[in-house]
Length: 311
Image 1 (cartoon, rainbow, N blue to C red):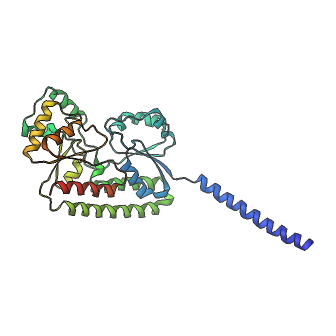
Image 2: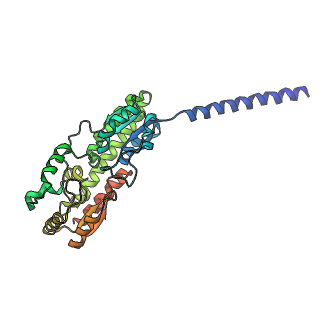
Image 3: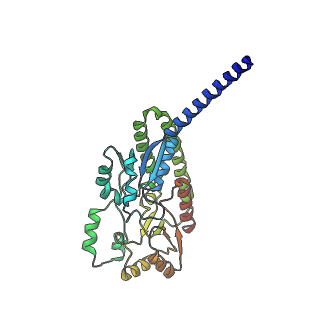
C-alpha cells in the first residue's frame, strides 16, 4: 500500500507541476500584446498589419462610411489615445486640428508622419479647369484663400508606388520601436513591397489599351493614381463643396463635350449633384471606395471599373 501511495504521490507532483507551467504560459500569453498603434484610415491599418503582423494591435480613427474631410474625433474615440504607443498620420484634415489634443492626451505617444519623403500634389477642383470653360462665380476670392490655406492633396495611399515609401516609413518606425523583432518586420515589409510592385504591373496592364484617359469623379481623391497611370481626373466638387446650379450646368456641358458617360462616386459623400449629372448625360453612376481596407484587392477592382468605361 505504501508503495502505491508513493507512486500516486509522484504522479500528483508531475500533474501539479505541469498545470503550474501551463498556467504560467497562459498568463504570459495573456499579458503579451502587440505594439498599440493608431491610424487615421483603414488602408493604413492594412499597411501596418502587412508589416507588423501579430506584433501590432491597430485601431482606426475614421470608421467605414465616415468622411475624412469633415470628420472630428469624438471624446469617446479620444479615450483610446492614452493607450497608444505609435500614431501613424497621413495628412487627413482633422489630424492637424487635433494633434495638440492628441499630444496632450498622451505625451509619450510616438507620432510618425507617413508623408515623409513624398512630394505632395496640389488638390484639384473643377475650378482648376475654368480656363477651358471660363467659370466665374462670386466665391472666387474665398476660393483663392481656401486654396492657399489647404492646397495639398492628402490621398497619397492611392498610388501604389507612394505606398512603398509609406511602407518604408512604417517599417523603420516599428523596427526602431521593437528592435527585438526587427527581422520579423523586415521580412514582412519586403513581402509587402513585392506585392505592391505586382499591383503596379497589374494596374498598368489593365489600363494599357483604354481609349479615353479622363475620369469624372465627384470628390478629387484619385489625383495621385491618375498621375501615376497617365489618366486625368475631372472633379465635380467646387473647392470641397457641391456645385451650384449655374456651375452644375457648365460642368454638364463640359462633360458632354468630352463624351464622358460615367461618374465615379464614393459612399462618404452626397450624390445629389452626381445623380443630376448622370441623368443629364444619360450616363452611369459607379461607386468606388478609396478608403477600403483590403487595399490591393480594392485597387484592382477600381482599375477594372475605370478600364471598363474607358474602352
